[in-house]
Length: 284
Image (cartoon, rainbow, N blue to C red):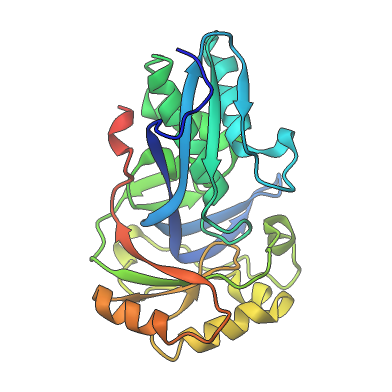
């Protein structure tokens, strides 16, 4: 039981997420913002290969460029799980990074959640889903929903989760070539922080908005340009703190048609919405 990761090692998915709406409903005394949102997973994302090691070493074999080792969420997740569990095993981790960084698709958070779920099983720890979600919250506000494993209505800083069922949809996702710094968006003086709170029963298709969108559009005009183009075809929105934008379509053929019509140079993808994370059964 030792690395290194081999090309034929099992591939573990780390799916993207969309925020179908995102309201900022308040702010805690410690500065964290109180949110309400609905998370949905996509059948597109990063892929990890993980091989356990007997010597206790934790190695990320191909860290994302420009990300210091201490900040990399895969490594942080592995080290946190190892420390809290007292496990003496290690792991080699290889990351196939397919999601844009700073895109609002939850790539780093999803990677961290997949590391927690997979190592919990490979190391034989038997930690519960609730325990893994609590660890995930220490890594970032979006990590718990990926461990939770289901499309969810989220409150608080994103950790209070209720499963929801959503209508099938295909999504056109476009990725403007900008990196949105989440902290800068949330600290911006123009951000709306007092949207009235709603109940889960209030949510329906097309509900709400993304309160961060006007701030991001002002700071990054390309995001506003991508939104304007996509809104020619449907209810386009920004996900998370940006920069990616998306629109939902009832069938895959229409989504592919819209994606094919995009102007030259617009990167992105078409994906199906998921109600369940591919690794949802990996924790109880």
